[in-house]
Image 1 (cartoon, rainbow, N blue to C red):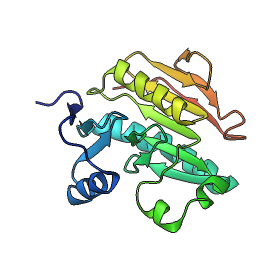
Image 2 (image 1 turned 90 degrees about the vertical axis):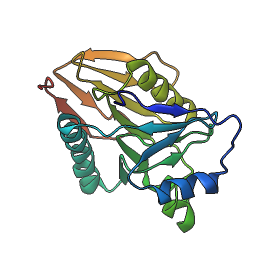
Image 3 (image 1 turned 180 degrees about the vertical axis):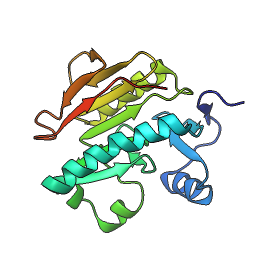
Image 4 (image 1 turned 90 degrees about the horizontal axis):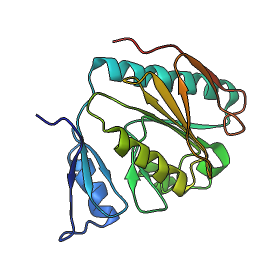
Amino acid sequence: MLSEPLTLDLQTVHLSDEQFYRLCMANPELRVERTPQGGLLLMPPVGGESGNRELELGADLAIWNRQTQLGKVFSSSTIFKLPGGGDRSPDAAWVELSRWQALTPEQRTKFPPIAPDFVIELRSQTDSLPMLQAKLQEYLDSGVRLGWLFNPQAQQVEIYRPEQPPEVRSLPTTLSGESVLPGFTLSVERFIG
């Protein structure tokens, strides 16, 4: 039974960006990411509780964005080609509109070569906390301006900002989108189940 993402170290095989894209398109049932070093991560599916929490968090972001029309919101199925070389799928992401519009139509259709401005990661039962924390740091190193890592197991959320240590808050709490997502607030209750 797969309990954590499986990392395939491809030191002897290097996939080009096009080969990685074709691999993902040929295997839509797989959730695949790629580390900056080229390792493939096969992500196990999440269970019902995690899937529900993920959608609820993303829905709040989408509703705020629909009202403000300040950017584009993306689901966990979207892979972003980060400047540092990784190909990552946050559980939810947001890109400011002018940055999104600066991409070509082909770039928007494939894996967008851009770091989101904002990301959400939700730790599921199969996720390693240190691996997710490293992923959030990779996002920041790539240009993400704000990230939230929800950890239901500890009833906490970690807030990631550039050039600052993560801020850890206990749940329940109210989060602010700060200057990245102006006017966006999210009240998070304790996770149950």
